[in-house]
Every structure is written in C-alpha cells, then in structure tokens.
Amino acid sequence: ASANRWATPRKAFRTALDAFHAANNGAFPENPAEQLPSKYLQGIPHVRLPGHAARTNSIQVLTGVKNREELFQMVNDSGGWLYVGDKTSPIKGTLIFNCNHRDYDGTAMYRY
Image (cartoon, rainbow, N blue to C red; front, side, top):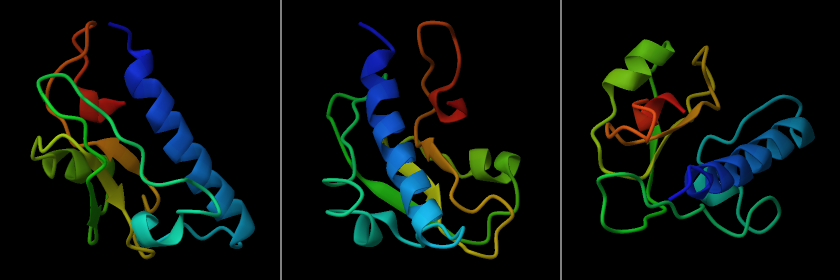
C-alpha cells in the first residue's frame, strides 16, 4: 500500500484550509466541519490510517494548545483528525492525524 492514501486526503484538507485562510484575511476556521464544506471542501476527508480497520472523517477541534509538542501529547489514537481551531493559539490552523501508529518508514502518523 502506498502512503498516497494518507497524503491525498491530507493535501485536500490542507488546501481547503489554506483557501479559507486566504479568503478570510489570514484567519483559519475555528471549526472546519462547519465552516469548510461546500465552498472549500465537499466534506471532511475520510482516512484509514495504519492500525485502524475503518475509514473515518472524525475531527477533534482543540483549543488551548500552545505548540506542536503539546498537540502531539493530545493524540489519543482515535484514527481521525486533530485540528487546532483556537484563534489565539500560536499554531492555529494546524492539522494532524490522530494516530500513534507508524508508517512504512517508521514515522508516527501524527508527525505528518
């Protein structure tokens, strides 16, 4: 299997976030599931990550996250997405996989 199955949905999601950011004076959506669909994205992309049997498009929107290491500590391996929606966070708009499993090269999926 190819890493492309993870890269394609992540790229589509990131492209939609970037388009929203550009159209909204540098602001990222606080809740992508509510603010992106139709204009920027057909819906939150589904992914099936290593170690997870089912595809999911679940997204957990986080607030109060100050940096990437803090964000990485919030990964609970539910298999969907983690997104920093707090407009006061220094890493607002950050999107990662909610997955501790490793890819074929040994990289933890949340580090993508």
